[in-house]
Length: 192
Image 1 (cartoon, rainbow, N blue to C red):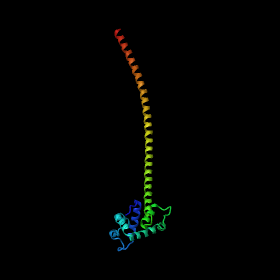
Image 2 (image 1 turned 180 degrees about the vertical axis):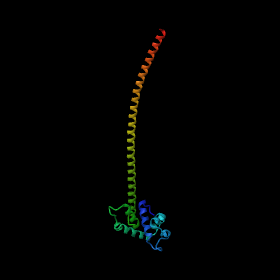
Image 3 (image 1 turned 120 degrees about the vertical axis):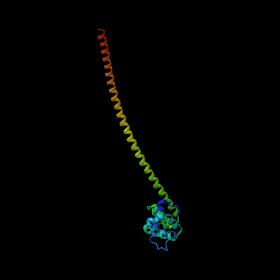
Image 4 (image 1 turned 60 degrees about the horizontal axis):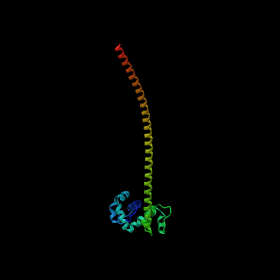
């Protein structure tokens, strides 16, 4: 299969898997016959690569899938056959139909879908990074507020302890002075 963007490849294979269920057994490409009786979604999962190979190798099968795409996306195939997709068309739909129809310049349409997919992935990546940055900013602000609150609490505690220490030193000095006075009085009493 021509290198298709993931979304286009999934779209093409899903369409083809659906078409397989509507085909008569003798119309189904031989490599796909074992999975033809599966449900459409299971066919796409189990035989995606085989379906892709059959689409690339079998123009009749690709034509059947194009008919299904034309029914699903009316007007798009005609617009592509005339040369240009409608300006508002989804790049994935355009690339899907272009791959199946193969009009002149279809590779550029697939490349445009690849570029749109790349841009969408980039936007998602940037949105995730922005969300992560915002979350980290919020966490940093919360951590700073917590640190400020803790610092203020410890500053108050240090101030309280300094006041208590000063009170205890004053009491100690008073007690030492009282003890010194008492010793002096005891010595005086002993001498007398």
